Length: 150
Image 1 (cartoon, helix red, strand yellow):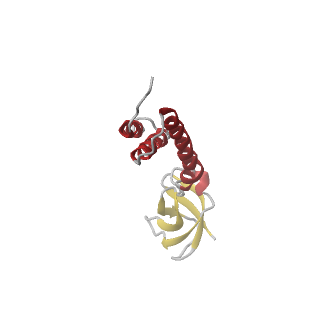
Image 2 (cartoon, rainbow, N blue to C red):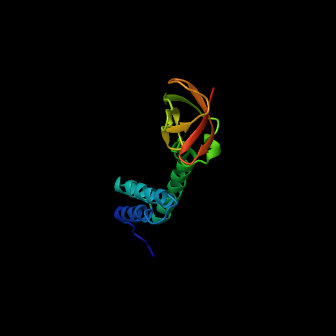
Image 3 (cartoon, helix red, strand yellow):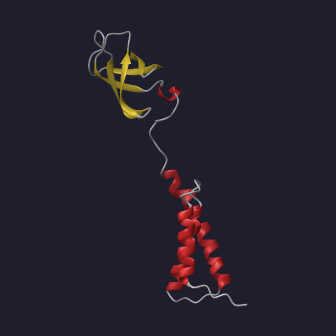
């Protein structure tokens, strides 16, 4: 029995797989759908290959797309902020005082790298500080950093 698969069959198959990615949180089905769309493109160009070769091209293209995603693209998309990391990641960070603590108000320090999702944090300190002093984080108390002067 001869199977005659047209380009639009592969196009629909690829789109269905890409849409299915919405419901599967792995981000791998997408690349198999992209492989199906690639086979549709090959067939649309008029290159007549039988169904066995179409499956082979789809499988190889899908594997190559998946490999490229996991090896090169995904590592570059990592979140480089420190948001969501535990307090141990914040301890030892160095910031600069932009507002000194006064009676009844906490001071504010700014960090060059966002610290737990924010560049500016209220702080408390035992030593007297002035604007521009550099401080290091020694602890976290609620939503306030405990710092000491460098």
